[in-house]
Amino acid sequence: MSAAPSSLQQLYENPATPVASGADRSRRQAAVLARALGPLPSTIIDVGCGDGSAAGTAADVLAAHRVVGVDWSQDALRRASAHLTAVRGELTDPGLPIATGAADAVLFSEVIEHLVDPDAALDELRRVLRPGGHLLLSTPNLAAWYNRGLLLAGVQPVFSEVSMRGIHGRPGSQVVGHLRLYTARALRSMLPAAGFDIVRITGAPYHDVPRPLRPLDRLACHAPSLASILLVHARRRKDD
Image 1: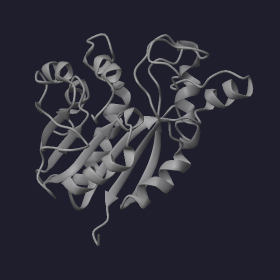
Image 2: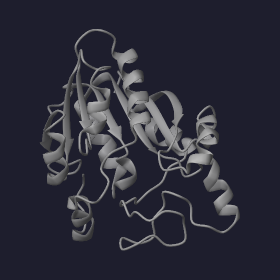
Image 3: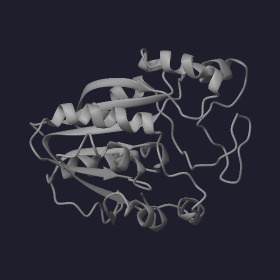
Image 4: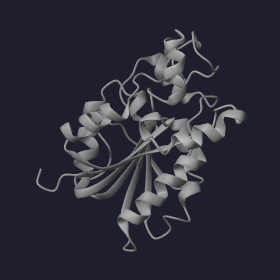
C-alpha cells in the first residue's frame, strides 16, 4: 500500500503471494461493523482489500452498505473486481482516492503489519473518516499464545519474517512481507496517539494453526492478548 523497494512490490504483485484474510476474521469484523453502523446505508472503504474475498464473505452482513475496495497491487485489484468496486490507491503520497471525511467506516484488515510507515497510514485513514467514523483493524498478534512458548524456546515467532527470500528460524513456509508486528498493548497506545478512541479489542483464530491445536486457538480468542489475530474497533475522535 505504501512506497516500497522493488522486492516488496514484486512480492505483492506475485499471484502466489496470499492477499486474503481468513474467512472467520472477516465474518467477525463484518458483524462488529454491521452492529456499529446500524441499518442506515453507509460508505465503507476496504483499505488493502486484497483479492476481495473478505468483502465477498461479508457481503450478506453488510448488504445495506456501500463497500469500496482500495489496494496498491494491480494483481489484487484484478481479482477483487469480482467481488466489489475496487480502485488503486496508496496510503502515502498521493494518498487514498477518497475525499476527506467521506467514509463512515474503514476496514483495515491485515495491512498495518506490511507498512514501512504505519503512522502516516493511520493519519490518512483518519483523514478519510468522518468525525466519529469507525475503524475496524485486524493484525497478527506478536504475543499470541504459541509465540510466547516459541520465544521461550528460542524460536522465531510465527508471523515474523527476517528475509524476503525465505522463512528462517520459525514454523511455516510462506513469505508474505510482514515488516512490523503488534501486541494488544501496543495498539491500545498507538491508536489513541493517532487520534482514535478504542471501542473494543477482541481476538480471532488463525486459519493456518495445525488442526489439533485449533480448539485451543479458538479458546485463546476469549483473552485477546493471547489470541492469534487482534481485531480492533476504534472511532475517529469527534473533537479533532
